[in-house]
Amino acid sequence: MNEIYRRISLSCAVLILSACLFISLLSISTAAVVLVNQIYGTATETQAPAVISPSLGGSTQTPSTDSTQNDSSSPPVTTTPDGTNAGENRVDSLPQDILDQMALIEQQVIELRGLPAAEDITRILYSPEELRQVVMDDFFGDYTAEEALVDAIVLWIFGLVERDADLQDIYIDLYSEGIAGFYDEETGEMAVVVGQGFGGAEHITYAHEYTHALQDQTYDLSEGLGYNEEACEQDSERCAAISALLEGDATQTEFVWLFDYATPEQYRQLQEFIETYASPAYDNSPPFLQADLLFPYSYGQEFVRDLYEQGGWDAVDAAYSDLPVSTEQILHPERYPQDAPIPVSLPDLTTVLGPDWELMDEDVLGEWYTFLVLARGIDDSAQLSDFEAGNAAEGWGGDAYAVYQRGQDEAVVMLLNNIWDTTEDATEFVEAFERYATGRFGSPLDQSPGEISWSSAEGYTLLRYEGDQTFWIFAPDEFIVDAIWDEFQNP
Image 1 (cartoon, helix red, strand yellow):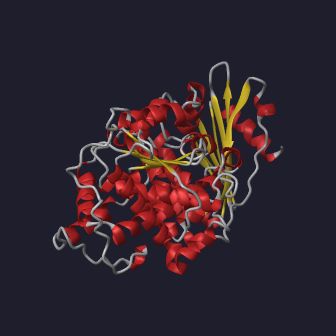
Image 2: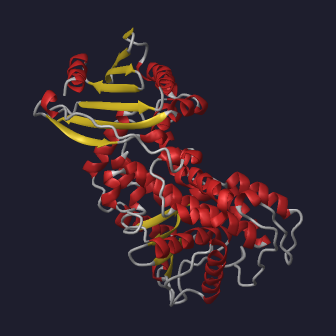
C-alpha cells in the first residue's frame, strides 16, 4: 500500500533514516531466549561457549571475550561528562570504553559479513526522550494531519483500522517506543538509543545498524538500489521487497554476530532485556500494524537465510544485483527471482462518479497485505486463521486498487482487481473472502453465480469473480457499485 508504506516504513529509510526497531529483537526473542538458556548453564565468566548454528550461518568457534564489553553495572550513557545531552554524544565526546566497543563490533561485522568499510562514520547516542523528538521532527515532521486522515480512510476500507484512527499518534508512540537505533544515510551517522547503558541489547542493535552502513557504502541505497521516495511511490511492492532484503540481511548478520562473537555477559544482558522489555504502544496498536512491522525483519531474515544456505554471503550479495520485486518473492523465496507480479490496470472512475469525487489513493496490495486484510483486521469476527488467510493469499499474481472520496459528505469508493495464478487460486480466495466479508458485514445480501454482495452500515460491498480474476467493489450504495462495474466492463 503505497501511501502507508511510503509515509511510515519509508519515514525511516527515505528521509533518509534507516531505522531499526527493538522489534527485530522481539521477532527473534524465542530463539534468543532458548539460545541464552542453553548457554547460561554452561558458560563461565571467562570462557564463552562454542555455538553451532549452521542454518543461521554460525560456525563452531569461541566468541570474543574482549574486556571492553560493557556489563550491567555500567552507568547510563545518556550524558557526557560535561552534562550535555545524549544527542550531543558524538564521536569526539563519547566515553572511550563505548567507542572501543563500537569499533570492535564494526570490525566483527566487517569480518563476518564480508563487506568492506569505504569510509568512517559518525557515532551518536540518543536518550529515549531525545529519540521521541527525533521521531516527531525527522521521521514524521512532514506527515500532516490531512495525510494521516487519508491513510486512515484507506486502511479503514480494507478493515484494518477504525475510520477515526489517529495514525499520527499511533505511529509516533510506536516508533518512539520501538526504535533501538538507526543509520542516517544523508549524514553517515550511526545512532543507538540507550536507556540504562550500552549493553547486550545495544550491542546487537549496533551490529544490525552497522550492517546498514556497509550496505549503503557498498550498494548506495538511494541511487544504486533505487530505494528512494520517488521510486517507492511508483512501485510500493518493489520497495517492500527491498526493505525486507535490507532488514533481513541486517537481522541475519546480527544473528550470526550473536552466535559467533557475543560474550556470556552480553548473552545475559540480552536475556534480561528480552524478559523485561515492555511495549505498550506496540501491544495496543492495530493487529495489522503489529504484523507489518515484523515483516521485513522476520520474513526478510527467512528470505536472506534461504539465500545464505544456497550460497553463503555471495548469494546474498548477488541479490543486490537482482533485487526482489514483490512481497510474494519474500514470502516464498523459491519464487525469487522468476515469479514477477502481473501488471494490472484500472479505469479512471472520475467520469462515472462525477466531479464531486476525487482520487485519494491508488496502489497495489500485494500478497502480504492481502493476507493482512483477511487475517489481521480490526474486527475480530472478520479475522480468518493464519492458515486459511495464507492459503487464500498465496495464489496472488498481481493486483491494483483505487480509492475515491466525495468531498461533500466524505463518502468513499474502492475498486480492487486481482489476477490470480490459476482459476483454482481465485476460487480459494473467493471462498475465504466470503467468510471474511460475512464476519465483517453480516450475511450476504445476494449470492448468484459469479458474484456475492453484502450491505452494512459501512456501505455496499460486491465481490465478482470470473476465471482467474476477482473484483472487490465498495461504495455507499448498490447504484454506485453497478455504475462502477459497468465502467470497468466498458471503459
